[in-house]
Amino acid sequence: MIAIIDYGMGNLHSVSKAVERLGYEAVVTADPAVIAAADGAILPGVGAFGDAMENLRETKLDEVAKAYAASGKPLLGICLGMQLLFSQSEEHGINDGLNLLPGKVIRFQGDYKVPHMGWNKLSFLQADSPLFKGLEEGHVYFVHSFHAKPERDSDLLATTDYYQQVTAIVSRDNVYGMQFHPEKSSDLGMQLLGNFLALTGSPVVQR
Image 1 (cartoon, rainbow, N blue to C red):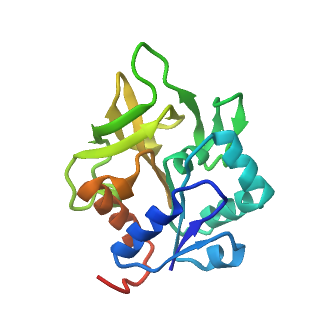
Image 2: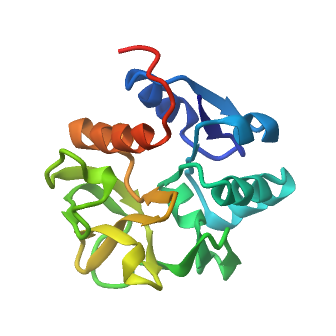
């Protein structure tokens, strides 16, 4: 079973349906026991970083997510959920994140359109990552005004170009993050999500 963590800010339905389309059982839940028992967990997110962290702390799901990461089972952050994995964000003042990945989330700065919205091509920096098994570089769908700057290059799996190198996929051990929406990114997005789900060892219940 794959737990989709419900802290009140996320595209829960679309992520859940994408997981089910790939043949896995998905449960949208805020229950710590259900999350802890899951084969894999997904932290989605849409909205502001500070509000999301406040919701996580109020529900104590911040500690649940940290404990899940420490368990060694695969955890995936999507969009804002990926940003929450980092140490800190400068969105609406400085806000602390889950600190599962060292680094900071900063606003796009420059004479170009913000938010970064639309289809951009991924560049795989670590082609041997299990997330990229059987895949070729292609386009995925982004919508974001802030982007993550990992402290360690080894945590950066893929980037895209938007007037600069932009973090697109991150990973450390069992913790993964995708800045784009894989569930809205056509075949490549679904294949990337499928490769993450395969890491969970969860049984495929349907095709």
